Image (cartoon, rainbow, N blue to C red; front, side, top):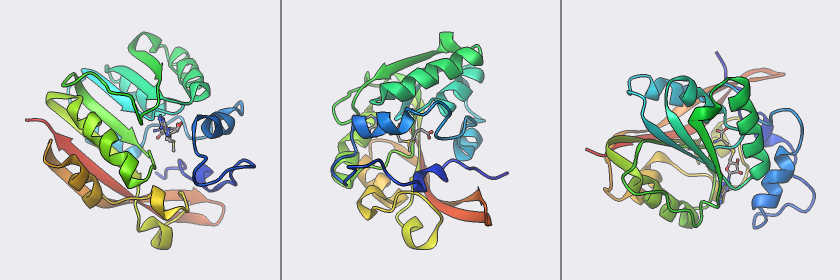
Length: 222
Ligand SMILES: C[S@@+](CC[C@H](N)C(=O)[O-])C[C@H]1O[C@@H](n2cnc3c(N)ncnc32)[C@H](O)[C@@H]1O
């Protein structure tokens, strides 16, 4: 099965977009269309990595339109879905309602540059395709790691730096890309690393199936 998720990430940016103008307004504008920008199916790697975990409290950072939050809720997780794009979270709320799991998905509008989740609280912290520069990702990752409860898991997947030259789609700004090694370095021993690797994600395109390169990190608090 292929994952169409990031076909949409190669569409042209709204007028006025610059590298330094990728804030809430940019994302809200992008999410303003009626249909979903991304798919409503969960990220394939998240689905695989979470399959063996007992449901508990989950924190979905940069939750977007909620495809992963809603899927987790369907699996029995209680999810806090955080994003600064309120337009996206409204769609997440609607998706949760349509799947009858709204009681288990709580959206929260917050900027991850400053948002500090409750420490050692979540059995699962998820970050999917949050593409910010290293100096911004570092503190966000530290706070995400701190939010993991004892015995809990941090799962991250993102467009890998190698994708720019060797993979399909994704952001074309090198500063928004990173590697599993950089994520591990930013975590700085806060969690036990279970997986840190580059993974291939097949993407359906009009010209057939192409391969996108993602970085994946799974880490655990003992
Ligand atoms: C590529 S989308 C991924 C959405 C979702 N994780 C998924 O996989 O479908 C990136 C998301 O990051 C959010 N985002 C970017 N910068 C953010 C920030 N500083 N604070 C909160 N959310 C942010 C955007 O609003 C957007 O929803």
